Length: 295
Ligand SMILES: Nc1ncnc2c1ncn2[C@@H]1O[C@H](COP(=O)(O)OP(=O)(O)OP(=O)(O)O)[C@@H](O)[C@H]1O
Image (tube, rainbow, N blue to C red; front, side):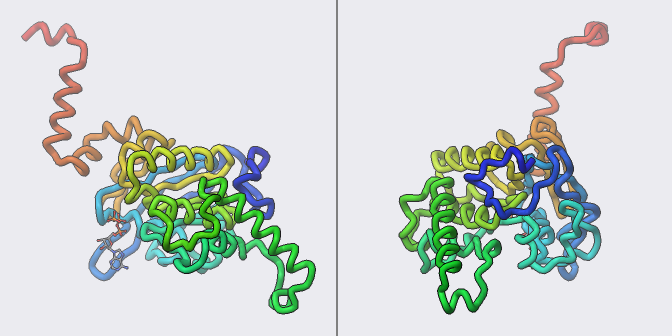
């Protein structure tokens, strides 16, 4: 898929992309226990190259735990998570981005006192070459590299729509812009898979519309997206496939149209009554059969 990449989103130094349509990430039997609590149980799924993949589930379902296992913040008790054939669960958290997986956090984690531009420049350190000596001597190669990093950071701020905020301190940015800055910083690592943990949290409807366009642009530029989101409309409208977790287990897995009609999903979100109402409505909409007339 690297051929399709728009360099406006993906740094030239990013790892070689997987072949289009191939599985990018294959999770098998992931389990994680915290004391007596089974936070994940036997979770398996595949994320295909170029997908927008949604991860949903009620509060406490295990979504963040799954994200944390995938990004090596937690070691699973069982299971494997292969990313382009490489076992992620054996890596250290700081090695994850080098392998092409970047994430944002549910609770925004920016360098609050640095500018937006500096936050994105830091995101690029993975792909820089100047060593300690170069930084101390500030030789020509180092200065040139710094200029490239700065230009690239500005390009990424522009890409997420906040170039005009480049010199503002991160903590002073409006909430929606902080979320977009987090995305720019994650993109600066040159990911093949961008994992977004509740990017629409705290956004108003118009900010969410802009966010949706941004996520779709990122995917169009060849980056696969994993999205944890509570905004059901956003997930169902833009994801190619959705995994629903409940009590740490897979409740449903498939295309949004199929998942959102699944009575178990409706029950998990809206209660048993809602699932029964939907079943009744669907039955009422079915064309009558010859059997119906016999009663
Ligand atoms: N580090 C931890 N130590 C102990 N329990 C934890 C830890 N992290 C998560 N849990 C528990 O594991 C379960 C799953 O939590 P998790 O945060 O993964 O759910 P979630 O689906 O992301 O929820 P939310 O939508 O509320 O963010 C919860 O019961 C939570 O309290």
